[in-house]
Image (cartoon, rainbow, N blue to C red; front, side, top):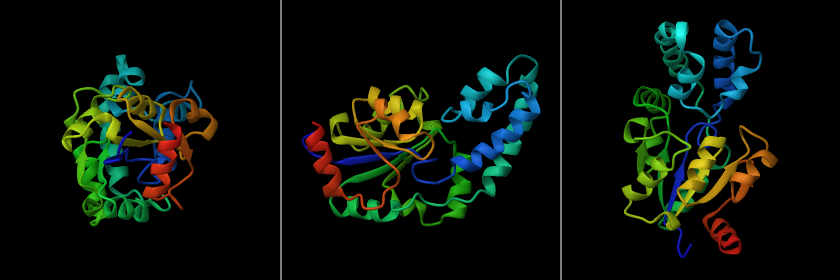
Length: 218
């Protein structure tokens, strides 16, 4: 990487500390529809809604998808959208150093409306917000992050991806970008093979620090 010009953030588990809340929601739905599979809510972490439905709400359960989606929308509308520690200061420092920022998420526009309502300042943190409606393929395909780079007219080598889920980490890797793994959803040792560095949160992370790490790694 010659120059860091953009930071592309996933949303849940990377911008917001929401993964524990989703575990509660999907735990209730999995116990209702798949009592034969204890702990399923942990297995589906990092999957898109379509991926979850395709694998677990198929056959006779297809007719239940609409109900689950309605419950999910209602749940997301009242979620607690707390930023990962240190995020806001890190983004301010990136902007101060001329780095563009974007959210690249598999969440849809209705979910983002809930985010904007809970966090009116959210749109001022990021230069672009890309949602599932903007992508042809879901993570782990690199499509979303390649589109994120294209939004700023940049090459993949000029971008950093910040991710927590296995599918997201694979997406960033496949896009040919430097990948920062957040150990918010999975253990540090589990995400290490799919990321260049691993962090617990953004406390103490700065543009200069990240640039130095990238130069050392490369």
